[in-house]
Length: 113
Length: 115
Image (cartoon, rainbow over all chains, first blue to last red; front, side, top):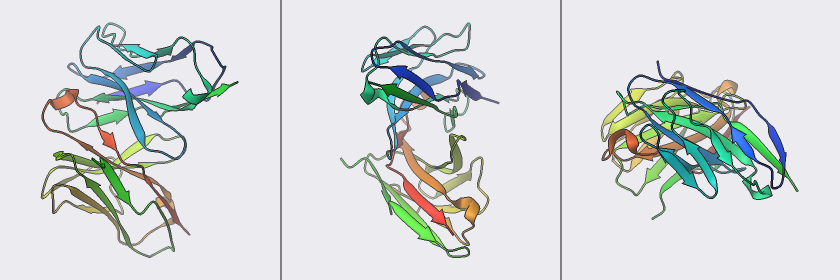
């Protein structure tokens, strides 16, 4: 079945460091891919998405490219801020059953000043 | 638009008590979902609904029941709460139009503790 695997955290970085959070997926067909962010005490918010191969999603300085050849959707940011400290979830929407969403286990990011 | 709202925000129950969590959305979305979030386990789908009057089981449905009598509301019930149901519960909704390209919209969560 479809699934998402993302790197375990926590990830601790200094402000202005480069961020990569790895996400790989297993799916049949052509799923849509998403990154969500969860700030402390809040629900999940969509950060960015990509709906077909080679698409790049971007928002708030974050980027991720849908790579079908490597089944990956890694999240990157060139210069993180303390305010980026949160839990990040990679997710996919099943191509053949788009009722279903599959989430990774989440990666906690801590950014130190 | 309020988006997705959840009631209550916090609740403490004793083992064996029952309660209902309410989720409401004002975006006219067809799909609605209930998840639980536990430390280190990400989100796990409890039940979902593809439209008014329909419900289906997700990954971890045991001990929970749901109802969707109105399109905008999705209720999650615990008939006899157990400590293992201590968790944070999130509701989400999603539109039908656009198919799999659409994201889910999440509520702020309900933190439930069962003693």
